[in-house]
Length: 372
Figure 1 (cartoon, rainbow, N blue to C red):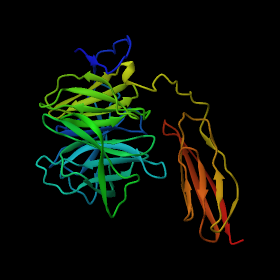
Figure 2 (figure 1 turned 180 degrees about the horizontal axis):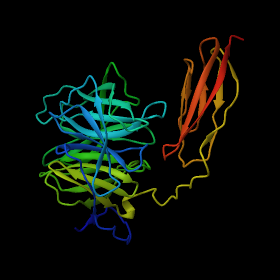
Figure 3 (figure 1 turned 90 degrees about the vertical axis):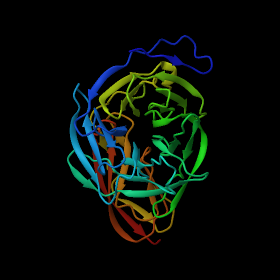
């Protein structure tokens, strides 16, 4: 199997990437796979969904060996699989990882609204029923078919890429943050490839990939600069009957697959298509620890700041907190709690720091709200 790359601009004489290799086969029951997303909590695990008319379930598959192992089946309660075409893993406003299911397919332009279902990525992998938050979306410029849902890992921005036959599609963005209970309007951002069947952001957030697949596409992964939209490379993919899916295994490697084909392929990217991957991730510095800030006091409706400090673990570290009174918010990246709280009395705050391996540390402290 060979890889061909075409690059926009002066890319220099970069070394050719390694050839694609077979990563793992899918478990039975995933014959109409239409969405794929890597777990952020469970190494070697990805999530997958089947196409329209199948069950309302997300499957967790461990792909660390040649044969994929089904680790968990997550049933998304209160939903039906109208046309589940995409899957992404993002973060909620508190920084917690969530699985996003894109019910966005519209082959005959008959849907006035699309839906995205969001639920927390599980801490442990076991069969479970999950209750999602559901978001309603509609395009600002009419109805479109789509199979690609992308989440920027830095900003949390959602994107959907339209799928057109014989013409370039369009990348649309959702409001940030999207809202439940109302219609969220998707607005065009920039062009995409012909017949886009899936897409994903690099873990660095510096680039994203849209796959032109299926029998009517180019069978390439087009990689774009996230800031400018400039195309960085077109990477040829292994021949598959109906190339439907793509996600990032890491910042320099894609995983691709197809309906009616149980083989998942690992596709290395050329250096010019992997910006940010030359930055060495700091190694773990011992066990992850979260310092307890001790008793805290804030005044009613007055500016208040509490800093959480995590040490050790494998960065980046994300922070979450429960028990925060209304008016206070937590920056998941920095661990800084800020705002103007409302209420009175003493509440218990439980803060958690989680690193990229899934290791976590917790601290609980009292926060007293006073009037003066």
